[in-house]
Image 1 (cartoon, rainbow, N blue to C red):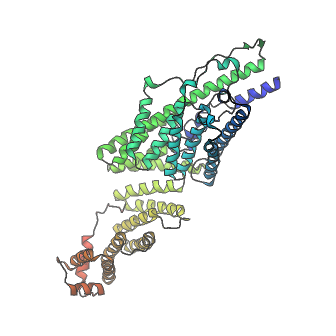
Image 2: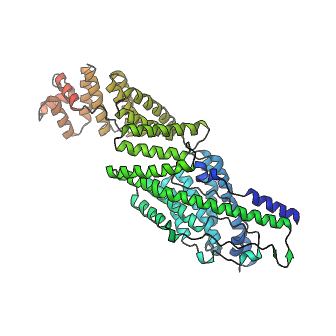
Length: 539
């Protein structure tokens, strides 16, 4: 008996959850604005016993086996998630497959209706759906993720608070491991995750409603104690407990207290994320100057809090710096925006240098492009080119296995061509623009009359005029005219001829590429009509 008590004590000691570094979404493995529930869920305890009260032996056996299997599967998936370390990878896909195996237990409701209505089983279901949704979100399957978050929200509505607390239970069973995520925490996580997913789907009003509900639940008069703690007597059932038994009970009490403290800290953090990060994203999406200023205010508030709670090179610091850089850029505060982006890049590179795959090449490419974009608008062309090329390298790596050209690569090449053009390196500008035309043609499925392709041909013609290659410029403009619709072609030819109209003979000459009609002077006129502001990037 003593040996068994010692084993139980060791188990409880090792299950303590007083792990500050993992309080904030597994040390940053989960993107800011999401939560993956990694709590080790106990299989045995009061909740499971209450589940089988009044059941027949056969139903009780099925209930225990089902609950044990689902709980063990969720615990296994949590370990796999920690090992995956975040990011999009085969390991994360394996986590998703493990979690989805739990769904079969939820779908078989014919013989297990009692399970579906039990708080214990509802908690398992909510944890599973939330974690499935988080993995799908990380795999860029946002719509499927949203559906799972909504399933979790619907499941938690069946939770019965009236049967959650039974003060007399502890009088009969001292060793109860009830360290399950409480209903309030599960509801908070579900709403935060669903709000983040709604923002990705541009459903800003739905996200705002969820944030309002979170804020309302955070009001002091709405908060309540998670559970009633009954003192564990040292002498019950008429006999004296062993010292090992008492030590085990004490260890369990300490572990439960640490878990409650951990849940409280995580809840406070998620309330702050909803109040500042999610609301900041909503304001940022509105796009108005006053809204951008409001978003900047919210990001700064959460950034100040995060710097007191987390390491200065934590992934969440990186995410907040990136968003702050974006709103500063929208406000045209270019120097401040660049500093914020550079600080973000420093944190991101630190994470990658430590072998952490929280951020992948797509994240690095996005930040590098943003820095290059700011430098471009600051007219620091040499530095902008360096950053654009670094971003382009990462974008090519990300798209290497894609069956179609990357839009990000096309966008970056457009800006590279523009910067080369402004810097006077016309050959490099033409080379980059040619690659843009080749990739964009594949991207639009070979539709040569696509407006973007015609626009890039005009730009090529402009550069050729500046380079003094007037005959090549004429051929490029004629090719652009051929691809235009009738009205657009007439307007283009009219502009090139310097007049307001064009008769049928001149139109036929234009189609034939007659350089006597489309004169050098006309080409130069069109070139001047398509000049951009030097600081205007393509995207």
